[in-house]
Every structure is written in structure tokens, then in C-alpha cells.
Image (tube, rainbow, N blue to C red; front, side):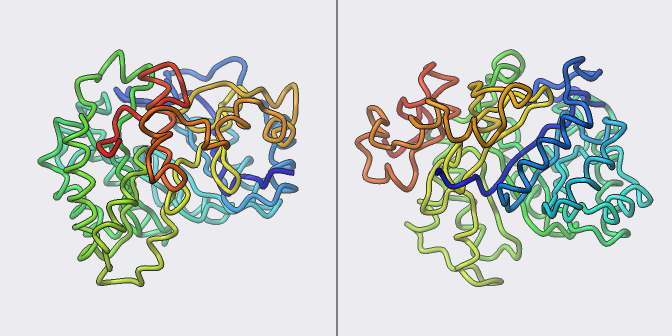
Length: 347
């Protein structure tokens, strides 16, 4: 038996009201005809509950664009699953947030991709998106819903990173997640020039690590396992909370979590299973086989879990077993998910 993932992400729909340039889900303005029905989603949630999953992320697309979203939340909550929501924030109001709290949502991640309206709106594809997202933040505060910010790191907004972190803190967020932009298909089509090179990535990770010393909230960096190595190298001791809290950051002492025991797996709207939103390799579909069986039997996952099979720089690196690089970036750049992470400055 392979230990289950700690975290499961279920994209409940591809439908979204925005047109973000980087979208990992390749969202669109209408739902896909093959999305899981409520009954199919219930069966999958039954499996997750029996598997003793610690955390379920519901996202999309924009999850609030699915009409039975609250029904999915209520069912998952009744099955004992802890639920967080990933949203662009533009559809949130106080009444809806209160309903989500009552249904079982424990926290909302709101996407914010700039410290200024023009920066955010240009990346998200709609004028006024920043203002609507900040209204969503206000709604969370008024409804007593914990929230955090999800922010994409890209070349054109590097000078805004300090203000983005400041905005998260001053808005009352409980955490700041800075996503290291990875070259998934839509990124390759619409914003490839925004991806950090190795030198910039190193500089940004070192800046974030230093910022964590004084920052009152936790900083996480999906897509860059090397960030936790920088925290340790610099012996970062946060001023506002115990340093042991840093070990809750994904990747800390474990490396890339995609498909790993006590790690992470993603369910797409049509039931396809992939190791991670950044590693888009199909493992199977829950309409044909349970997620537990896919997790146990996948040859792809068996390979991912064997760090001795990592190649070139990552395979030879002294941090191999506690980092492993981003498998999604390796796959999108080289076509080989066990190749060396081309974005790592260490290897």
C-alpha cells in the first residue's frame, strides 16, 4: 500500500468568468460537456473520505461558476473532508461567503496578480477584475472567512513583489502563495516571455526568504522546491511565528510533491487524474477506475516516486531527495518528467 496524498485538488469545472494568460486549467467561458456529474463527484468524494485525505482544494476554472458547487461542498463536508477554495475572488460577496462557511469551506485563496489594478487586470483579461477581487477580500473579512492570496511571479511584475506581499499582509490574509510561473500550454501560447530565468529565480527566492524573517504571515512558493533550500541555507527564523511552522510549507524536506505519498494529486473536471496541476500527464480517469486504484497502480507515479531515476543535474544533486526540482517544469521544457529541472540554479 502506498500512503495516500496529503492534499487533493479537484477542479470542479473549466468554466471561468476571466481569461487569465497563464491558466493551468486552460479554462474557458463555458463548462466542458464531459465534466463529472454530481453523482460521479459524490462517488469520488466517498473514495477520498475513505482514503483519509487531510485537505481538499476545490478550484477550476472558477469553481463558483458551477451551479451545484455548494452541493459539492456540503457533501464533502458531511464526509469529513477539510475544504479550501481556490477562486479569482470576483464573484464573492458577503452573503455567498457566509453560505460557503455554513457549507464547510474553511479558507479561500484569492488570486491577485499585481499590486495595481492595471497590472492585475491585464494579466487576468478583464478590466475591473482587481477591484472585484478586492471586494471579494472585503467580503471574506466581513463574513469571518480566513483567506490567503495566490500570486503569480513573472518578469513584468518583479518590481511589484514587495507591494504585493505588503497588500496581502495589510488586507488580512493568513498566507501569501507566490506561484513560480511554469510553461504549461497556455503560458507557452500567451506569456512565455514572462517565465523567470535561473538567475532571476534565484534572486526572487532569496528575496522571499529574507522577507519571511519580518513578514507576519507564512510565504509559500508552489512550483519551486528550491525555495525551502534557501530558507534552510539562510537559517531563516521568522520574527512573528515559530520557525517550525516553515516545515509545513510544501516541499520542505520532501521536495516536489507531485504524485508522492503524503504529497499531492489533481482531479480535472472530466475525471482525469494528473500528478499535479503543473505536471499534466494523464494517469487515468475516475469514470473508469477509482482514484485509489490509479494511485496504487500507475507506472508513471511509481517512476516519479523513485528519486534514483532522476536524470542529469537533479539526479546527481546532493539535494535530490529533499528537492527533486519541479517535475512539471522539467516535463514542459524537455518532454521528460524525470529530466533535470531546467529552472534550477543549483544543478
